[in-house]
Image (cartoon, rainbow, N blue to C red; front, side, top):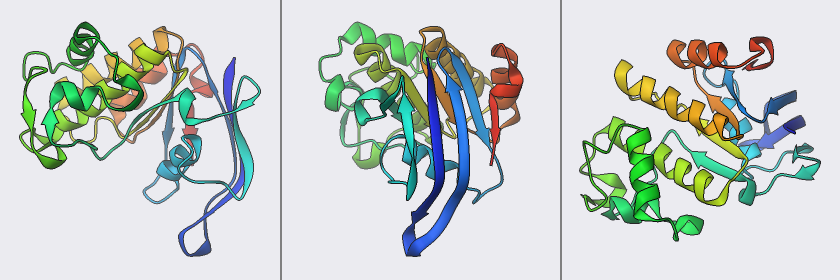
Length: 212
């Protein structure tokens, strides 16, 4: 089974065409990297895939059905964190029933378990964390959702943009782990480490690097 994205074009703000005639297939059990120049429409494609932007034509389908929010775990480039504990930030929405053990495992996967705890308080917007920590916490939240709800699609927008080399390797490991569980992982990135590592990981590199 694979995630098929077929968009003839997408019209967004001010009636501009952000992406025209884009078509791709993202296999389950792999990490696919979407790359391209700034402004090429990479984030817009992710927004279409997760239902935030409606394409003027075309569909996003999984196993023959239209993709909905229930299929997707999301990790955005901007950390969408709120005032409360780390535990509360990881348990938002459909992940409310996640056990502390699952939350702790997610922190460990992204290398945060020795830096913060589930009881660590955060201020509005995640203040109290560095930019890199906030980004990894956002990815940990996507891991929790994917693990708890077994969502088959994971979307990540520049998940290592604010990270150093060591932290970036942890992100690559986390993405690989999600793919090992059978998820179709689509990552927007221009970072060489992400592109190289994910291509080496997948079985058919030619199918796992998308350029726009």
